Amino acid sequence: MTTFMSRNDLFLFLGFTIVVLAMPIWLAPFGAGYPDLLQRFMIFGIFAVGFNILFGLTGYLSFGHAAFFGVGSYAAVWSFKLLTLDAIPAMIFAVLISGLFALIIGFLCLRRSGIYFSILTLAFAQMSYNLAYSVLTPITNGETGLQLTLADPRVLDAAVGQTFVGQPVPTLLGQQLGGYAGFYFCAGFLILAFFIAQRIAGSPFGMMLKAIKSNQTRMQFTGFNTRPYALSAFVISGMYAGLAGALLAVTDPLAGAERMQWTASGEVVLMTILGGVGTLVGPVIGAWIIKYFENILSALNDNILARFWSFLPEGVADVVVKITSKFVGDGWHLTLGLAFVIVVIFLPGGIMEGVRRIAAAFRRSGSSSAKPSARTQPAE
Amino acid sequence: MEKSNVVLHVADVHKRFGGLHALADIDLQVEEGKTHAIIGPNGAGKSTLLNVIIGKLAPTSGQVVFDGTVLTGRKPYQINQLGIARVFQTPEIFADLSVLHNVMIPALAKRDGMFTLNMLRSLDSETGIRAEAEHMLEDVGMTNRREMLAGSLSRGDKRRMELAMCLIQHPRLLLLDEPTAGMSRHDTNTTIELLKKIKSRGMTKVIIEHDMHVVFSLADKISVLAQGRIIADGSPDEVRGNPKVQEAYLGGAH
Ligand SMILES: Nc1ncnc2c1ncn2[C@@H]1O[C@H](COP(=O)(O)OP(=O)(O)OP(=O)(O)O)[C@@H](O)[C@H]1O
Ligand SMILES: [Mg+2]
Image 1 (tube, rainbow over the protein chains, first blue to last red):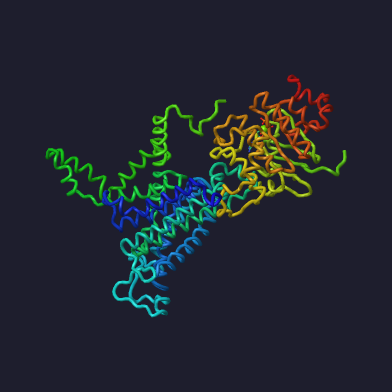
Image 2: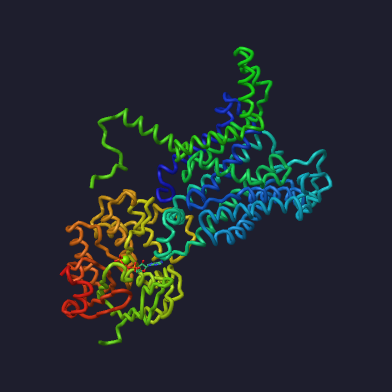
């Protein structure tokens, strides 16, 4: 057991699991305890955890991961249409297809590193996005998006004689996956995704990824072929993205190409950096915070703002409403951008660095006479 | 000179950087188990020669043969896997990782080869590799620094750690590019002792050094490089007595 997982890792994992499963309770006071939003917390948490394996551990910044997210969504919807409404085959199918897709794109993009790698991933993702709207419309159903219909063959369901009345919805062993059932389904996957990421980070393979980020040249002169390591990290993170995309299709079985757009790729970069690049929980927290504020701010409009600022004198209130309205609704990305700039400038390690700093300050004030921390370097 | 136990043969190597002839007609034979020093003024082409050997640079012409295997055209990681390790002139280390991990990584390369997808094992269960790394750090006198981030070490300690990273692979050929530069006199002497100890184990070494004290206490053979050419070659005493060398290099300094 001790070699399976260290004590600290075990506590982190158990703590994470409890926090996730209890979300409907502790998020209720924040007005975020409802299934629809909770599901998105889980889905984008998975996306960010996987993205961090490539960006945080290996140091390759991809600007095209939404492509794998989108592929996962399409693959899942096709599984619902052709095979069965059960969610498990859809998950497996989506992860395999997005992994295969990531293998091809990763193989091509990893011929370069640094900014050229980033631009290649962006180019491939935009190509996929455009193809989804044009040549590939038989697969993607273009702008309308891919939907479930009563006429879908669903061969496995048909074989066991299962029929549905009304709009088909994804199920798990016959149970519909709406509401809290959908949330717990996604939560199970987030916990599994977190566990795997934790194992990877704590394995010799994970150390190699960190070493590639730190000094790729040294890795090569140490006898490692770094390309397959980076490619494995790329494929794993692509599969995570595909899994997240598939879960979005489970909770809302309509796959559209906008999920593959570059803004969606950029969003996962922001989540990871905001939370803390290279940390395990940081990216998840980043994803939750962005989705939480997106939910609140994008729902605001001029009327709500006018009521909020109504305590101000008439003329002033109008001006304030006009200004603040630019930061909410569709303009909430402006707020996101501002928050991002502030974090990167003042807390380059993201929220996790903030947490560490606060913890360190507490420790210092709590026991000023205690021995200095282990990281303190001996004087030269 | 017996030819039988030559383990590294640099044969007629030229290297041009545009108009600069950095290496001209280099022919170098390193014998098994010996320490071969390469000395020469700044910009003579010493580091370039090592870069050609380990596959960082391709020679313009000529080739490098290691124990019957042609190295020229192979990738750096393949050359390392054949048993060649190098300490660089400016330390090449994993600055963001701990000293212990820096030394464990090369040990894993030696054990597992150039690529393994070992992500189901835990690093904590690698007790063998860990013990090996701790032992190595003890040898270079860095046990008390093993949890520190490598990037925060002093220049001399980075070098010692890099040496440990190479030694843990038990290479057949060790290339050292000024391994004692930036070290205090005391640390230099410790390093000389360490290198002597390895010598008794039969590892072949090529060492570039400016410090003549180091060169003369370690080398079995010395080649003098100036402006990309080997101008003298022989035992330490022969080289010391060579008037061409005195003029080109040792001149004022010695
Ligand atoms: N990659 C390169 N591209 C162009 N020129 C180079 C390159 N590497 C080395 N040189 C040039 O080749 C010459 C030899 O350089 P090298 O680094 O081999 O010298 P050195 O003998 O190691 O000197 P030092 O004692 O200063 O380390 C120098 O003039 C250097 O500027
Ligand atoms: Mg040099």
